[in-house]
Image (cartoon, rainbow, N blue to C red; front, side):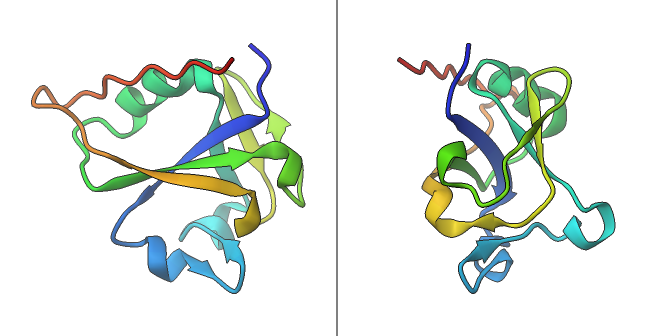
Length: 111
């Protein structure tokens, strides 16, 4: 599946402090220099592997055509950004919580 949308997960509580001056930058960006994003087809697997049991998350919906820095493909449906995300590329923030089994049941279809 080829889509212009990618997704990034951030703590809902931390979102306001990480979203400043027209850019979103995760806490560990200064250390890693990378913002990890995921393609639609790999989202559920990614959420259950990396964020299992978490609540109070935002799923950022990012339009790659609006990004200042284009994402680089990585393995397993991941995309990596090496610059902060300009906030006009963030189309939406979707509230996410795991279910009672501490898993995410999310199916993203892009048409």
